Length: 101
Image 1 (cartoon, rainbow, N blue to C red):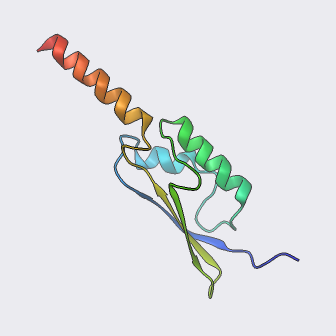
Image 2: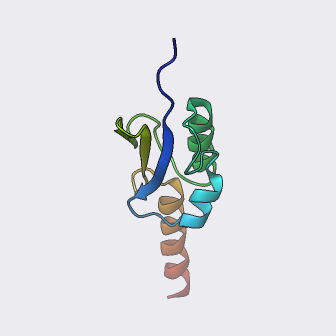
């Protein structure tokens, strides 16, 4: 027997990264208002990781359930620790500045 289905009420990103919010949202396969799907959640995190992050599906994601209204608030942590893009771009930027300074 299946339990109740939860709707995704909101998806937020916490932290700072050079990846734009628009790009993060575009990568999501799961949208606000959708019923939560484990498969689409995993696909979404995989897509976010393809655009320059290294989000761990367990450590860097927080699920906040509203069991009264069957809603889910999804929080995805994006920061310098999860961002491959930040470190690579910052290192390249420092090298370029040294060359031209």
